[in-house]
Amino acid sequence: QRQNSMADQYDRALIRLSGAEDDKLEPILAKLLPLIFDELLTQTEAPLRAKIVNVLNHVLTRAKGNVTIKLPAQAIAERWFTPTLATSKAAPFFRNLSIIFLDIAVPRLSPVEQIDLALLALGRFNELQSGADRAVFLLSSIPGLGQSAAEGHRKTQLDRFIDLIGQRPADDPGFISF
Image 1 (cartoon, helix red, strand yellow):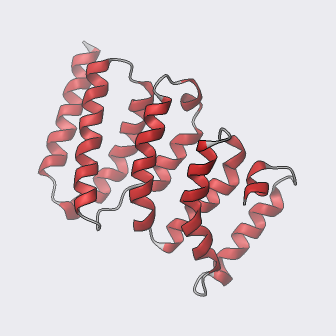
Image 2 (cartoon, helix red, strand yellow; image 1 turned 135 degrees about the vertical axis):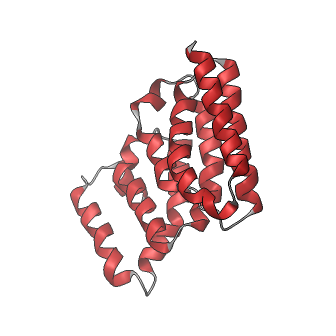
C-alpha cells in the first residue's frame, strides 16, 4: 500500500516537473530536490528508487539544457551531514548523484550563495568522511573562497570566515584543509 502511494507521488512529481516552464522551476526544485535526495537515502525498494532516479534524471536534463535553472546547492550539500548518510546502503549512489548536482549548481549560485556554501563546508568539514567526501566539499568551496576575497565582498564576507576559523580548534580537519 505504502509503496503504491509513494510510486504515485513520484509519478505525480515527474508529471508536474514535465509540465512546468523553465522559469518556474527554481521554487519547485528548492522544495522538491531536498526531499528527493532524502528519499534516495532511505528508499530501499528498487522500483521506487527507479522512480526517484527518473525524477532526478528529468531535473538533470532540464538543468543541463538551461543554465538559468538554479539548483538548491546548499540544501543538497546539507544532506551530506545527516546521520542517515552514514548508515544508508544507498550512500554511494547518493554521493555520486549529489556530486553531479553540486557540480552543476555551484557555478550558478550568486557570489553570496557561493560564500555561504564555502562557510558550510568549512564549518562542518570535520563531520565529513576523510577522502572523497572532503575533496568534494573542498572543490565545491573554491568559488566561495574566491568570492570572499573579491573586492566587492572582502569587507563584508571575509570577517565571516575569520570568525568561523577563530571558533575552530587548531587541529580541526576543516581548519587544516582550508
